[in-house]
Amino acid sequence: MRLSNILALALIGHSSLVIGHSADNSAVTAAIHPGEPGAPVAAQNADILSGRHPDLYVISTRASAYQRGHEPHLVIDGDASTDWRVSGPPPAPMARGNWVEIELSRPAVIESIEVQWLGDARYDYRVYKMPRDDFRDVVREGTSAGGDAGLEKIQLAPDTFTQVVRVEFATAKDNAPQGIRELRVNGVPYPAGYPQAADKFAAIENARRILYVEFERMPYVTHFEPKLPYADGGSGLRLLPRDDAFEGGHADFSIAVVPGRENWITLKLWDGHDSSMMTRGNLIVVETLDGDVRQRDRWLLPAYLTDQQEQAQDWNGSTRPRAGRWVYAHYRLPADVVGERREIKLRLQGVGNVRRDYPMRSPSPTVYAITSAIEPLIR
Ligand SMILES: [Ca+2]
Image 1 (cartoon, protein in one colour):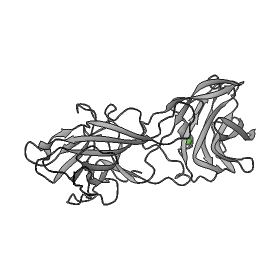
Image 2: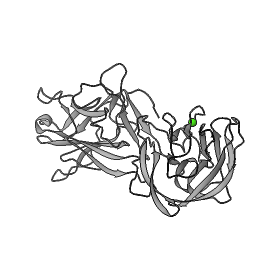
Image 3: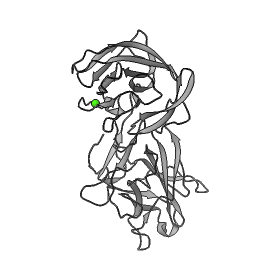
Image 4: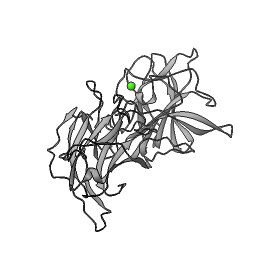
């Protein structure tokens, strides 16, 4: 959803949205939503991620295994030249063939799917639904047409009602590469229903699940690639790395503060990594742009980060992969930086690491809100 590498969204002015002051100054002083149209933010080398998923959409792709460069999400990327790929039988204790699985946002009646197979060989396949955790019913069994015939339509059993569709196939005798180029679920519109990775660095999760083999519980590892690019709804701004500069993009704004005392700037971020932005080379620092010499050109690291919640995923077992979550980065503005001002001009600057001696390498987490308060708040 990249609109532009350079955004000049609006003039910086005295337009910070004042939410309110309370007698004890404990409420939010001001809030800015930097991804919304008309936000009082001037950004360069940044982009806006926005959108709302349709009612029915793919929340994750999973697979029994994959070869590097042939990850599970490549079955829904809209590109027939990329594929999810395996070779040989699936890892033990899985006993049948390799599989790839699509999980939808809610259960629905699925009449058919479309599969574009890898290679010219014919596949002996089974399509499963998952009416409840870890019980899968075959809703279609067959053999593919063979040849590179594009998307092949597979009609499912009548009234197939499921949140998960799995395509499994028998292993080729010579362990030749097998896989799927593209997979579509009937009724889920492309491309809106197949949200793509905005961040190519988003990790593949290895999750341990329970498999029953002849009534024995066998934990096994499966590969999970949620690739959720943005929070569901709303717009956010993220700072991008630059080819032509050491540090990344920036976003300038003015925000109300309470004079004469310590204030806190909190960024509400959507993040899908298991490591914090402090450690992975796409950090946001806050810089002060105005004031007297003591107050100007200071740069502040987050005093700490707060994880609030995880995106709900319909996933059983003890290991719940992390698809995305709200993270709050809290920056302390010391009283001597605030001075006697009621409004302060600040910059969000994308940098590579806390010492600023390494270039920014990947986009920052997406910023959905900037709040100012006299204490670090989550909202
Ligand atoms: Ca593909």
